[in-house]
Amino acid sequence: MNVRRLRQPMVEMNLVPLIDVALILVIIFMVLTPVLIQSQITVKLPESSTGTPPESETTVEVQISRDGVITIDGRPVPGARLEKELALRMGASAKKSLLVQSDKSVPIERIVFVLDVAKRLGVGKLGIGVVPPKG
Image (cartoon, rainbow, N blue to C red; front, side):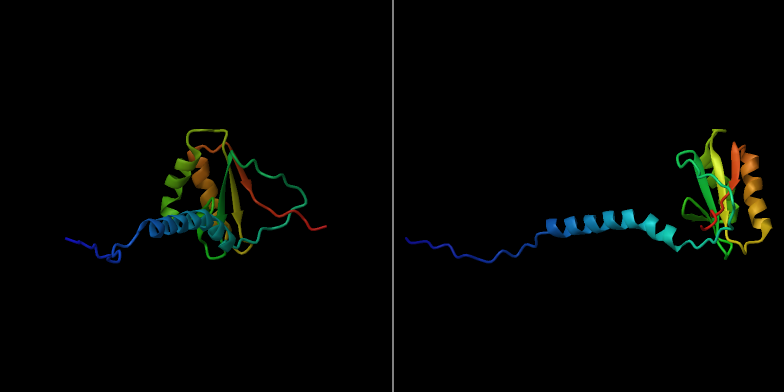
């Protein structure tokens, strides 16, 4: 008896390349999201004739945009959660410093609110961000 095997096309779909592409896209979005958020924050700082750059590892940056949106290190935070978020970022270390950067048109009350919350948490140093003069 001559038995012939009939070749049938493979009907299974290979999902491994699809999963690989999906994971690569997730990684790309995870890397690009902080950069995109930071580039969307438009804070026009006032100019100053003197100023020192902050130490990045011990400084937490708080930005207040023209719209009144408060962001901590590039992530938006509602005003009611500001104290909790700063407490998480600052910890119990008095060596940490807080740098407040706000737009020129932001009312001083918003800046004082942030500085007051930071002082209640026992932040070691408080600073206000400025732009060095041109030229």
